[in-house]
Structure formats: structure tokens, C-alpha cells
Image 1 (cartoon, rainbow, N blue to C red):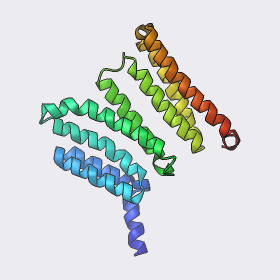
Image 2 (tube, rainbow, N blue to C red):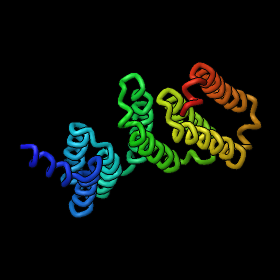
Image 3 (cartoon, rainbow, N blue to C red):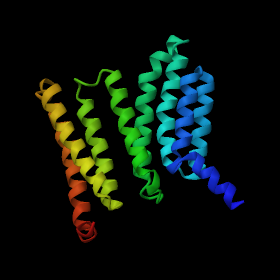
Image 4 (cartoon, rainbow, N blue to C red):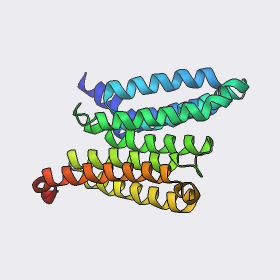
Length: 213
């Protein structure tokens, strides 16, 4: 029994990489509905076996499967950007919930896919030159940075800082005209102040643990 179990895990690859790759191959070789079933199966299997890499590959495969379905139906295709964006925001929220749920195994997978879907969905919806784009980047920066502090993971803290710098550059380059309006500028400054306040407070509260990290 133990030999069969070990063989089964080896076939799935490290952290479920085989699960995700098989799912991706099925999506590429099949049409929409079959691909969606493969994605659901791979996601459930990855969650059951606690294999984050499998889920990390299954989720983008799911978006490709939805696009395949959208090639048959214009209404579905029109909803793809919103679907991708909402999925990305949901994954970012779940990334934050890995702290109270003590599910650190899934943090990086959720953060990576969340960023991928939020940014791609926002760009598809035309947010690149609008004020929501830097605000979204700041929100993701806050979540990742806070999780990095609470889970004592330096890579996430650096990632959160990079997100914040990207948000500031995006605001300066693409939405500088909108920031000239007092209301937009005030909202942006409030969002920035909230993030820096939270990060500074947590940094002081966990300074001893962070010094050892």
C-alpha cells in the first residue's frame, strides 16, 4: 500500500506539478466543456492532496477553457475579462485568509495566480489609464506585504514593496491627468496612507521575529 501511494505521488510530480500539466494538456487538446471538467477535477485533486503547484497550473488552464467556450458564444466571450478579474480578486482575498486559516502552503500559488488574473483582467477591461489600476496594485501590495510579515516570509515582503512601487509608477505614468483632480488625489493618498500605516504597525509589532527572518 505504501509503495502504491509513493508511486502515485511521484506520478503527480513535486507538489502536484503532474496534475497541473495533465490538466493543461487536456485543455489544449479538447474543446471547452471537456477542458472545464479537467480543470475542476485537477483543482479538487490538488486541494485534496495539498499540492499547490497542481492548482497553480489548473487555474490558468481554466481561463483557457472558458476562452474556448467563448469562441462559441459571444456573450461568454464578453464576460471573460470580468470573470478573470473577479477570479483574481477572489484569489487575493484567499491569499490573505491563509494567515488565519494557517494554510501557508497555498499562499504563493494564490498570490501568483491572483496577480496574474487581476492585472490581465484589469488590462482587458481598459483600466491601464484609469485610477482603479494603481489602487488595485496598492491593494494587492497591502495583502501580500501583510501576509509576508505575519508569515515571516521575506520574499512576500519584497513582493509587496515591488507592487507598491509599480502602483506609484503606474499612477505617475498613466493616470497623472486624473490625479490632478482633488478627489482622485485624495483617494489615492488615503489608500497609500492606509497601507503604509498597516505595514508600519505590523513591522513594529513583529520587529523581533522579522529581525530573525
